[in-house]
Image (cartoon, rainbow, N blue to C red; front, side, top):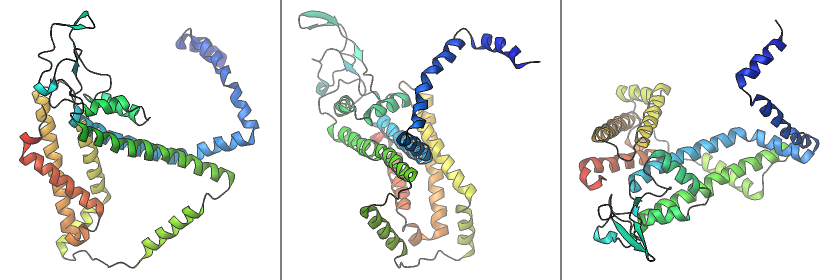
Length: 330
């Protein structure tokens, strides 16, 4: 049994293009030149050394984009459709129904059509690809669509009809997604480059920031003790256990994935499923917050900004449950 006996079978398995693929690998030969240059080696070393921080930054960027995809779907789903006849007036609630028949365009008779632009938020994938274009700073057309989004489904978009929500959505995403997250990649590569050179990347500003951080971390603070009764101690052991924290994180991720699964033209059963899972995870979050408050005490609980964020989410969600018709989109 010889290795050479495997080669014909391997060639047949890969197909007729196997030889071409192997021969095309010769195009990688110029990479050998990089190993002969000290500067090139330092760049490659910096990139390799920055892989783990870059993965962290990429994970944060993807999570941030996922959140904005869901927000965009709730604000702009099915609201970018427009008629090819620009004479329709969305302020008069003209739209898909009136977009029929023919119209004159510079003296040419054309058929009206109800079209959806490529950049839209009708599905999660469409929203994700649209936002990918935005954080590469190709945002002008998407911003205009958000500003002109129709007030309801099936209505012709109106110029600057949705300026506040559209601009707020785009500014928030561009500021964090483009200016902050993408610059993280550059900063990690620069740190890796300095580390590869054996130089500490600590300018005066960085040293000052590190000193101020040390001062803030070691500044005397009022000690707040949690309740010492048996019930609170038992609940504290529960909420601080890794299994409980993993369950909380898993439920949050599952809720986000369910919300991201919304799509254009969903039937009534799917909408009821979405409402049911949202209510279920909302009640689960309320129970989690109640247990944490009982375990840590109200004073210690509200001392964390993240806990205030959780309370804000609960309050906002509770309003949409109490007044569902005021926040329901068609």
